Length: 360
Image (cartoon, rainbow, N blue to C red; front, side, top):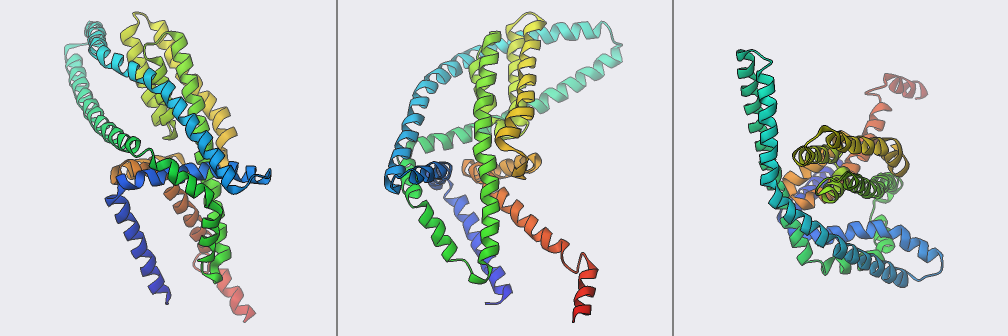
């Protein structure tokens, strides 16, 4: 098979993979989730094997403990979150009324200090900004509803995910070994090195970022609750859990927290305290959590992560969000591999061609 035929075969395979993800997104969700969980738990299973457990015993024990822990957490969290969501829905009109009253007072104060033309321009600017904000909010709500629909679909297939996790975790080493056996013998060392780099990036980002999100969620929830912010627990946890999207999680929590605080409290001090919690969270994340748990070795820039998550969600829904970071890790490793070859090629370094000519 020529190089051109190989390239065509790989492109056809990639197109078929994308088509399957697009068409079978909801069906693939429990399988991709099970694969992700198995990937997370495989190092623990390997450690138990080192301690003398058989693979089947280690797999059964880890899968059972993980899903029992997950069920217990969901049983504790879901009632609390559901209650707060219901209360929040009931309180939204009150918040809007309170905020509207404060905005009217603020506009009255501004009008008394500005000329009539400046006031008119400010009103036009405010109306335009409000319309844009409502448009973005509506779009975000639609995406959120779509994601929740996929999540409900996932919950209805929850029985499949543990089964997939168990079998993948049990056969993980054999699957990896079989994959390596199928590689072209001439390029096996190069491909294995690239797979090792991809695994390093995914392990560093996914496992580390998961811990960062959980710790941030606990920090925000405790901090906002101590201030007395209504729905501080749900705002804090949601902010932490969506912090895997760089900057978006903090901005979402900051806007929601400041909006609720401004409507709830009649003075400035609690609002400043809420802002202080999010500022402290950013300092904690940027200087301690992310450097310790994720580190600089990940090699995934924040801009690319944001782009990958948005593009994956837009094209393939919730399944696209799950696959976004692994796909971006593969693209990053392959891009650096191609770039390294280019930097050592005659196209970039003419002296390489001259050196070869002298050797000949």
